[in-house]
Length: 70
Image (cartoon, one colour):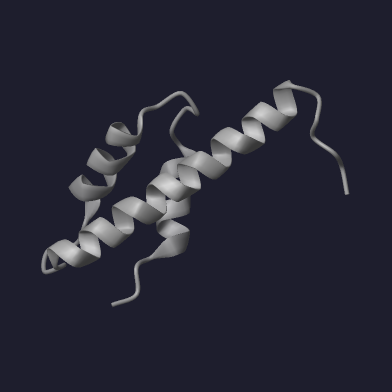
């Protein structure tokens, strides 16, 4: 099954960068579609945490002045 990546990115983007991984996972689990297998839910949670970590890296780069416009 394909996880809805763009929807997950949108959901994660609404969270503050200081939110915990557990908070991200809980929100994704709450929004999972009925009928998803546990494996699908875990994949969605893992993808969400990955997106969250990317947001955190971007935030750190911006506030540290290391963000480089390409």
